Image 1 (cartoon, rainbow, N blue to C red):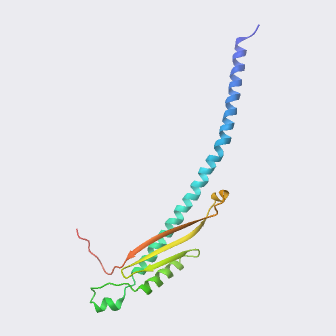
Image 2: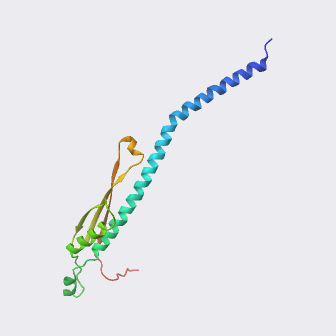
Length: 155
């Protein structure tokens, strides 16, 4: 005589075995996806950090360059005319970028009323190396207009 309880327990254990097999397949398929997302998040976070540092360097270099007014023109006009000393502005901005470490390249443009600094750097990747991407070029641009003295905003 067959026991109905025993047949039921055999069916439940085989169903559990099939489910555990599905979990193993699902984990094997999803693990590379999860690792890829984690790796890209790490590389992306590092890239955002490097980009922010580059923006800080570009901002500071542009501000330093924009402070280089042509004093002769300023004095001759009794303070009415502000013009940038373009050669001094480029030199000061370039010196600031050079003082921030190696690996930076900069393009500095000085116009009579503003300085534009573009700074770039190659960032080494961690996870993207597996896909053949070893470096990523990041850059930041900052303009700074010439200013002298204290300006008062209209309320």
